[in-house]
Image (cartoon, rainbow, N blue to C red):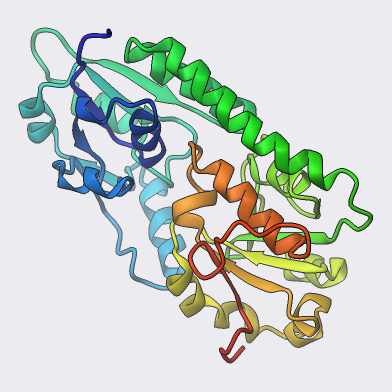
Length: 313
């Protein structure tokens, strides 16, 4: 049996990976965004954002750009708390300096440490295969490589079952995934892969590449069958509050997806934005949205809702 490792996870997806590997007891600290499983919320939070995440999308984007322009981090790491926790291992990421605490933030926090410094494992997933590799890397760092292989195998099998069922479906709806409302951005990274596996035809964004900016005119021209709104870091209620940024644009009511009631709000924060074990559930959510006559996984009302279901546009 692997010896305990004192772990501080500064990225929510890594925290979920540690727990899925059966090593939650090793966690001694977390980031302010680590909230699943709920039991990890009892751990001390070693980070906080420098921006006001409660502001509208455009203001959040402006705050982020201002911080990055000044070569500042979007997050603050509590170096004193980190030192008191005496971690053997720190998990962080280099995939996105906006989405979570980055390797640079951790390196700055460790700059004046004396004596032995903890091992730092930085995750950088861009595509689904990278997520599986990161699970293996975390498992190796925890001394349980075989559990990593088992977890990857189980998640892959679960997702392949969905993908295999969609291959024979006669209709693949054209799908637009919106990752940010103002300014408008489409989803990238692993999302195009998930859409295709769920039986859709992804219109914007390229697998393995960051979320691209999206011109409103291009969205109008594409006229998707389905519009999925899953802003980075937002849950469903928060996304609904941001929807006027889309619904008040000229031509919104003319979209095929709007006319047919196929605009959906998804919990990006819990599922799609976190490259960890719950990407399997993310795929199931997409499948039951795109092909409700073939898939029912029970995520409706929790992981996603219809935008028009009893709510004004």
